[in-house]
Image (cartoon, rainbow, N blue to C red; front, side, top):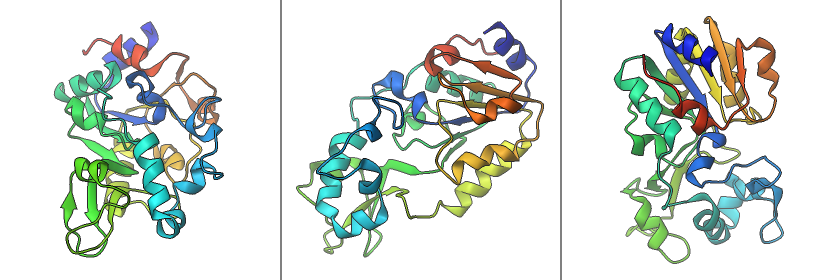
Length: 238
């Protein structure tokens, strides 16, 4: 942690790339750990298949049963990692958060320089007319949430089989490539194309904060085997 603080003290352009492990301290389970979401089966189907565009189109009502129960956590609140990142942003040290999470907790913490690669549960739109709806509309609906026009309302989250938003990708890659320090935290780096984004980093310090080893560690300046919230929360803003 002393080494991490020293690097931060000399950082002028920080980028943070995070995954599900950033939000576990907020009570949101991760995906690929031994007891993560993908370890089980639901209605005879593996979760990764349920979270695909094909499944959404063919089994929309079943998708929403799973989505409401396992993907939305209205009780979750930002943890020390989310809050520290906002502090670093206010200090103009953190230039961007690039997140694979859809939970919206970075927004709740106040982050504005935010690239949500896989979208966010807070954003929902009618597939027919494009009308926007809040999360409460999706959660309170019975079965498939429907717009007054009759169209199904789909969360603006990137399902398997869907492309990432090109403008979000462009912004995220710009910030990663322009950073002098990149923190990669709480991610298995198994989901493409997001996992390959860190290959664009050409700065001085690559820091990995993760409880399990990652291939990216071979290029890292520092590896921290800690809970993300604990490690980030312990940092002092220069």
